[in-house]
Amino acid sequence: MRLTVLAALHAGLALAALHAGTAPRASARLSSRRHVVMATPPKKGLTRDELFAQMQRSQQQPRRPPGRQQPGARPPAAAAAQPPPPPQQQPSVGSTLQLPPPHMLDGVPEPPASLASLADGQRLLVLVASVESAMSDRLRQLLVELQGVEDLAAMGAQVAAISKVPASSLRKLGRKAGVSFPLVSDQSAEWLGALGCASDGTPSIFVVGVPSMSVLGIFSAAAGEKPPALVSRVVEALPDV
Image 1 (cartoon, helix red, strand yellow):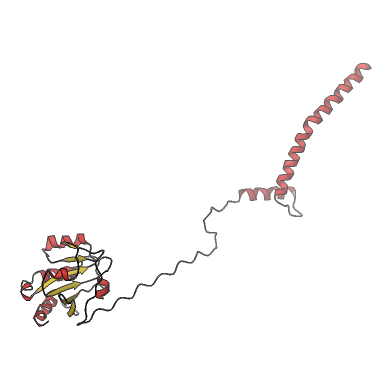
Image 2 (cartoon, helix red, strand yellow; image 1 turned 135 degrees about the vertical axis):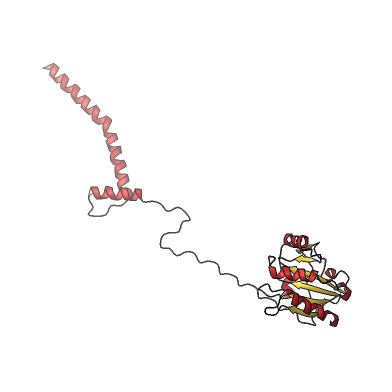
């Protein structure tokens, strides 16, 4: 009888110890589970399985990377494009060329110090001007045709040309075509802007008096007129200016 009572007491103590050791863990699991469930407020009327599925969807929902535009959102408005500056009016015959001091000009054989320096001491400067940025056939043919005029120096005239063509291409022209008069590269339009050249690159020929820098004549190719015909018109007009 005494052994039976002692065995019952031992069993009771073991069971109490077992409950005492596991109760905090169960309570912790319950507290943790309650915390997870309460992180997303449940909707009324949902079963436990529906709540569990809702939790899984919220955890699997992809996050949008920062900076990526949300689907359906309007793209940001682009900055309004600035209108191009209006072209300057071409100088008229009788006016005086007012060109700024050169800062970024390049040239062959060297950058010009001034417009008058291109005349090389002659009383007239025959200046070919074009806004072309690449050496086109019409500009090349015109420059080569002017190079072939032999009596310009006898008439007190010196030829020069200014364009946006890079200096490397101008050197190539001088080397291959034998063009020896000054060739100016004005890629920033320091002087070309004041000359009012045609925006389509059509060359203009200015006959300028030196040192007054007065415009004595302006020539450009008529419709269908070839470079030899244009050069002939300029040369014929030189003695009268």
